[in-house]
Image (tube, rainbow, N blue to C red):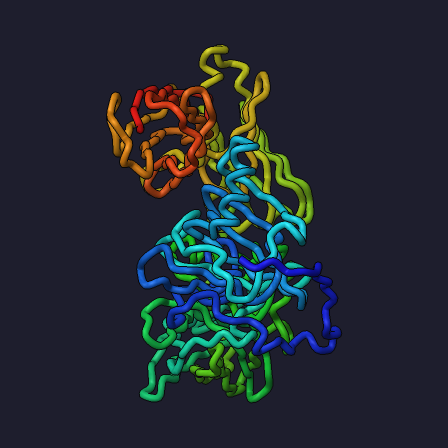
Length: 563
């Protein structure tokens, strides 16, 4: 890896008025294979917008990853989840490139990282090297592609961020993906907004029949409507040579020929990505696992990606009128698909009302809310939720029913359990769990303990309970047995698992010295690389301690030999 002779200065060389102009020949591709995407920029994911592009790596790991331009390594983060092994390179033109889910780094960076891991005695690290610590030339091999962190399969997650740490679609910088395929639209819904509005004689959300045309466009069934209404669609895109359901670049709507709404997935900030749940029909997603994008902007929606709004995308349908509504969905290469919908304005005397289940408790979104019953209390800060609503709150034994998870929260709220009635030995093994799925399987919610209480912070409504975990983690050697000669082995592998509260931490030593074991949660495997070369003895004593989230621990010891 080449060393630069001078430090970089990082002025942004373009002014505010030129923000839409991005360098086209400055960056090279991060891989030396034809680029095919498993995920596009701005794609709708669980609780966030996708902040980069996911480049396929031919269903394998270990492909060379190249620096897209000169720069220096400004950040390295290694975690069990999220991006896994991730590398950040800052470039002289003010942009930063990000490479994630890596298998390993280049030898120089790998040595730098392992020195820190051994110094801190931890696998998970986040460091910010100085501008002169690890300098990079365009085309240097900086890493190898992998599947670490919360990756669903081998690929390279790649980002370009501006000097304010906002991710921008990398395709604006000349990274070319072949795409001659139109986006496709699978569903359309109409939403009466006010109590007096209606679509096809109903105040409820209505699914409309979508008719595909031979040219790739669509028509929707004609509707009768009145009052303030909006629409939502489910849409995806496919690039050439792939079958992945990817995100689109923009959506526009037109009412009687006039622009009504537009959302452009070109750039966003990480501060706003959680508000994806305000863009989609969250209740529909939780119930049906389908992301319907609302083509109107509700109150308390801070997303910056909207533009060209007329009445926030809502339509006002008058009696005895005829209107035409059009939706245009576009991908990055300007392939587009249209929906045309005819609306007949007709006010009905009787309509089917929207069902609004009422409970004993009503939550005002702009006020702090505290709910208490028996040994449980819930504290919800103001503006945790977007709308006012009737909230279901019940406590039976140690089980809390807190509505259901069909209403999105945009920040954390707190649940407290008073456990003073439990005996001291029993308290140590208790944790708060969220009960999920049809069978209400307990999932550990990070639990904080004090003398007489347990608490957790969460963004999810639903069912919670106190659960006891008295079972220690499981430890099993994967590729060796006690007393074995391992002279020709490159790796030492051990499987660890915990069936209840989950793994909290682990610590491994050989002959009393801490060793780096990389944890891959998808396979539940710890791996030690013998190339770390800290072994000087023929006979070696391995000791591994694994602790779960309530403090139960297991110890595994074995002896092995190496020449």
